[in-house]
Image 1 (cartoon, rainbow, N blue to C red):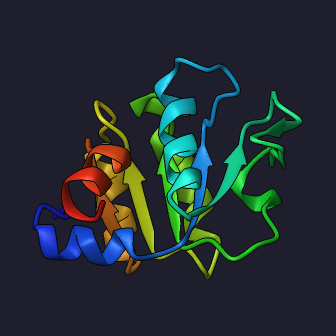
Image 2 (image 1 turned 90 degrees about the horizontal axis):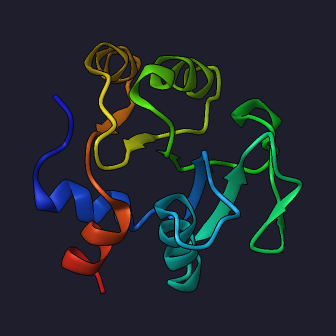
Length: 136
């Protein structure tokens, strides 16, 4: 089951390196504002967007497999129908502990696969909202 309890959400929010799949370079979009907020609050945000060279003065990776750094959390800002492929990429890595899909993004089958592989899953929640509520 995806995480619902505040204690586990707090533990997840204590992890520092977040790869944001679908990170946007467009101010005003949630996929820009949320990772910017996380960056401003001390997180190491790794933008993942094949259509951008750089976001937040950081190089943007084309995919999770192109990220050389260790990833604690994969934060997903892509449509629900793309989550399965993103989970597949996350499962190919040994370092990803958590897959977190933002508000409105749900794929129960992919969530179950991730959990069966030992990953923690958060679905349909905003990292910024939860950070403000539980940490800030």
